[in-house]
Image: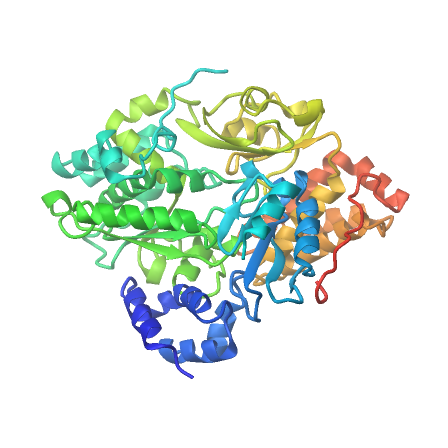
Length: 156
Length: 439
């Protein structure tokens, strides 16, 4: 396996922003996750290691440190629900329960139909509009059960 | 409602001020033009910021001008120089920088360019937390506009000053908001904080002189340049000058981000800005500056919101993120949520922090679940004392210990009562959803 040419070219552009190529590793992991199925596979780590001149384990060390990188396949949609203090005080637990009920996914798992992966995350900086969730990279704030239903229903 | 002059959110609350044309029509980039074209000597810009008394808005409250003056003389130190803007806002309760980046991106760029000019820096990296995609997009567009108008890049506005501005997307680790963790992360590594010294001004990004400033801090700079340090000092208190963005969340009627002068009583902020404790309930306790600052009791609500007053009251000003707990809030639950966060975010380098955060989280969890032990309060206390102060490379360990110690100090009886009841009476019901794996 090798990275698609378009992605390799893009990584080249990314690396130009920095005095050392390695600085582009985290942006590169983001781009790979976006383009290559929503997660970072062992093959992707090997490809990135080859691109950056690192050992695969170094890429794994970085990828596994950052919660935004998924090291296992995820569903078609990823729902991240903040469960930190400001959201917890305003009912985040109810939102978790509602999302799991509607999607039929276990918390930190994927629904049997493969459509939704649901997990809780730490503070997302939406504290003044708590509770909140992030669906596929878009924030949804000031949630209640009705709003959650509408958001998930629109996910396609 | 208290009437006070505002400036920080003026653009953010104006339609389309994120666009270059609107920003400029409102006087934007006049401060940059002033320093570049007058020209104002870089040392004079630093002196002006020093005289203004501006303190960092990222949590530590360090004097900004003083930090800038730590950068070595470029005549004697030929290494490249960097400004890293800390846009990794992730202190629980804090949601202020996001507003500035999404709605007033040019304000941040102008401030960063002035800071770069003052410290004779040629490259700025804005490290944005990964989840803030809207902030990234807004700044990306603004950088494109600014570059097109010769406000970023080579020979800015026809002067000798050249500066690049780059965006860098993080990937969701709280520790990367710590300045040395941020630099490691920006270099493409795990966000492991570095021992200090060396400090960033001596050896920062790529072992070169670096200054790290928070978004809101940088946002103040064009206003200080335009209106002068004396104007800036007319707001706030002698030791905490200017306005600050106060986030207020949790059990209040109107959570939000409000621009306020330092020194207002917290009660006034809670009641006038946030509409008071929600549902006509009484205040139980509050965090003044994010989850890393110690809980304060309801009786401390008349304290003034400024660095010295909050410190005198036994907590820290932090990021000015007030989190309000009403009388029904469970201290065990709140402490567990916060301890769980630090456990999740500890980078694992220092054993006190790696082990301590895990223990704190597990003990609060078992008390919450009804499995507390008679000596748990004493264990929490001794653990937290073993984690802080200053026992680790960075302050995350302290940040986990401080709220724990404050909860034990203020609510010892409630904790003991919960343990003895073998089921916290205020705890949430058992979850009704399945959890995958052994989380």
